[in-house]
Amino acid sequence: MHEPLYSAEEMRASEERYPGFPNTADELMERAGAAVANEAMRAFPDARRFSVVCGGGSNGGDGRIAARLLRAAGREAVETDDHGPADVVIDALVGTGFRGAPRPEAAARIERMNGSGRPVLAVDLPSGVDASTGEVGGAAVQATLTVTFHGRKVGLVVAPGRFHAGEVVVAEIGLEPAPTEIVRATPGVLERLPRRGSRDTKFSSGSLLVVGGAPGTTSAPVLSARAAMRADAGYVTLAVPEACLAVAECLALEPVKRGFSWRDAATTLEPDLERASALALGPGLGRSGEARALVRELLERAQVPAVVDADGLFGLEPVRRQAPLVLTPHAGELARLLDEETAWVGEHRLEAVTRCAERFDAIVLLKGADTIVRSPDGRTVVCDLGPPSLATAGTGDVLTGIVGAFLAKGHDPLDATVAAAVAHGLAARSVAPQTGLIASDVVDALPSVLG
Image 1 (cartoon, one colour):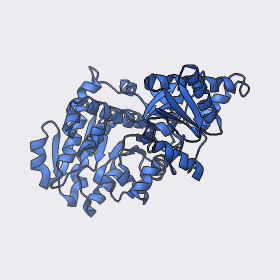
Image 2 (cartoon, rainbow, N blue to C red):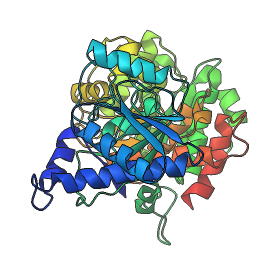
Image 3 (cartoon, rainbow, N blue to C red):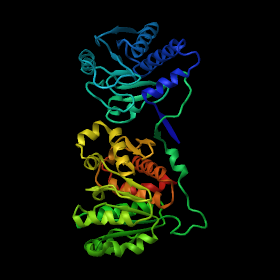
Image 4 (cartoon, rainbow, N blue to C red):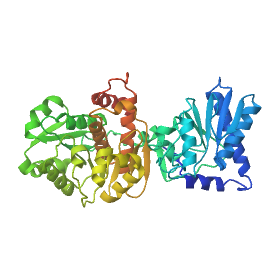
């Protein structure tokens, strides 16, 4: 269901559980070096000359063994402080124990590797990347390929570290698998989704109330409602301001439509809320005072799981409620929720999503190439199956609808949110061609992904 992602501490613990450790540490290092040498020859079959930039720790030891084995295989391999004349540079400068910013001398070596114009193979993870967080505090190797040992490190999957790793190959070195605090979602999570049975009705199959829309952005909640139905919700009510109702009627056939006025919106929606088993709030709703007040009032009234996205997140403050709450911000929206800069969120994604989950007592899905789902109890899942084509308007509204549908089905809130991110990514990946993908394409692809 999930792939473990190892922090530096968890990796050290795995090594310490190896029989005979630390006296057997050389065995592990020998296997690691062999894995690097073998992968270097496989990935770069025409390369004859390798420059291996070694540090003083165990990462450097892995590099020296790799150099020895490359020479034994008939290649030129030089252990050096600089990249020198080579077809491929092997980065064995620092390993999983690194944190913060490299010292000036190490930073200069990293910059020389990056400026070599040659492919760079990183040993375990690119030098300069924090293995436990993916943070990059200064200079960091821009690898073409990373050979990592035992399992992927958090820093190879979470940005910005993931953007330095290139292709990642996992090499087994004889350690036993172990549970990790952070995991990576696999398509297998979709197998646990509730399926309709012969006794189900349209309401027991998941009844979702979607509230959003404003003149000019009515299509946002329409996308959410259509996505919810394609994600197998049995009954979807699409509630929009009265000024948007005619447009919603034309754009969305299957959902039930409801128009509301701002002066009594919550009262108007009360019967729909009572019938719903989940609530989706915010897409295209606008940022007016009336919209913000409605979001808060509905969250306070609703006794069902709720997902809040887009405009629903604007100005949002923590709300006391018993039912689960899911927030699905992108980096800019999360920055506003924490009163931070967007760039800070991009540089500290794990810390940012953790702070947000704790502040709002909510499951938080931070969108991105490394979408991170964090629960208030500390469970963290990275969902990185989405393609770059998802970076287009409306796809976030689609994700909101999928989350809402899975919550409406009664799925565990964290599992529902993770499954939604996985389904969203796989649906987008299934669209051909990828160029020109639009949000509606993702909606239409959902049934084939969900089976």
